[in-house]
Amino acid sequence: MDHAFHSPDTLTVPVESKKPITAYNLETNSHTFGNVKVTVTKGPMLSSQCQCSSLKTNPEEIAGGDGEQRCVFCRYEPKITLKHLPDMVFVQNRLVVAFFWGKFGIEFNAVDAVNSIRDTPTTDARVASAEVWQAARSESLKTHTTHAVQYDWTYTPHYRGTIFGQGLKVEPTDLQLDMNLLTKKDPVMFFDELQLYGDELDDNGCAELEIKIRIVESYMFILLRFYLRVDHVMVRIQDTRLFLEKDKPYMLREFSVRESSISNLPSNVSPMDASAVWQALQPQQVVVEKITFS
Ligand SMILES: [Zn+2]
Image (cartoon, rainbow, N blue to C red; front, side, top):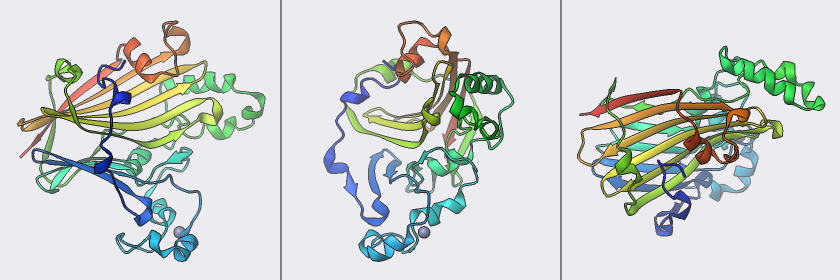
């Protein structure tokens, strides 16, 4: 089990805190923790074409929104700079951590995450993996390989959240996340999870970016996890952990990368199980930052 998230599957989300909103089929869920307000917003995945005409025939679908009478595709497509999108992009999904009534904070949103994916092939080990991967692909898929190497087919994000407003200072630190505190079975006051994007790599694996948040009496903890599995070839986990202890004037943000070829994974670890892979692998890279607020 992932140390960072004990038994997330067994947690019950308080149903009464989920408030469905009809506008654009959005659902929001929020919680206050000290001076912080956390808001989770979820919506359907980005469609591949304009659906404005269906909005016009169902005006109740847009009532109560911000008044903009355009479909999700028309509202969000111009904001996305990445040319080759993952199959599923939940463009409206976001987790906002706002300090002091929203003046500043940090958020995790699908648009910034998708735009952080490089639109060119990566020049490090991933290229080697790409070659191996393409060699492993079926004959029919090989016809697409020229196309495939022209972008980062792994959809690896370069994203640790979006800081907004004036009031947060980010600096490197030697401080560590308190794993003893994080693995204690404290009663959960707020829990939610959401997906930002996902792709099944033409049935050759998965590339998923997901968020989980947990708030207990003494801290708030967020995990932004990218999980890449290329069947028979490799796995990669990129985690961003955001940790705020009650009454502390700073958050800690830890970024880590774990990667392995499938053949080097312990035989009892299933590549289908990201938590098991996480536990089996030592991180190749760990960066901790202190985010101080005033
Ligand atoms: Zn439209």
